[in-house]
Amino acid sequence: MSSRRPHSRALSQLHPIWRGIGCLLIILIPLIAYGLADFLLKYLMGQNPSLASSLLHPLPGELSQFQVQLGATVVLSILLYLVISILGSLLYSLLGGSRNAEVGSRIGTGFRR
Image 1 (cartoon, helix red, strand yellow):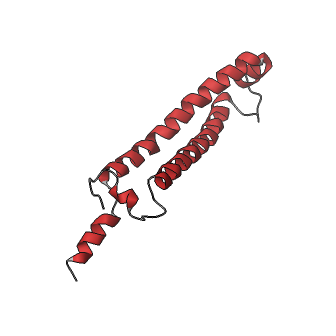
Image 2: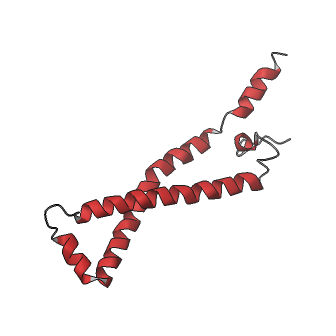
Image 3: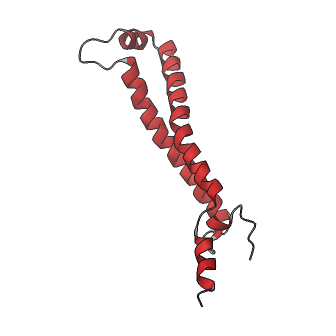
């Protein structure tokens, strides 16, 4: 009976590559969101010159360009995280995650039923 316990415990652990991918996404999502926010603000300032002048020379008490870009980065980070979570959930369900609870731990391990 004790010989079965380590085997089931090994299946419940995630493969280390998935931890690495998660760590990489924690770093990449804010960087991608910052780039998108920068692109979005430059595009909007090209479309509306009065927005550009108000962001480049803010009055006291108004938001500066950096604060607007930081807020856009936070919003875009959340949206990117949601999109990646939905795609991950779809992939998990397509691989049989609802039928086999351990399918997430079997990806990349070479273990098959």
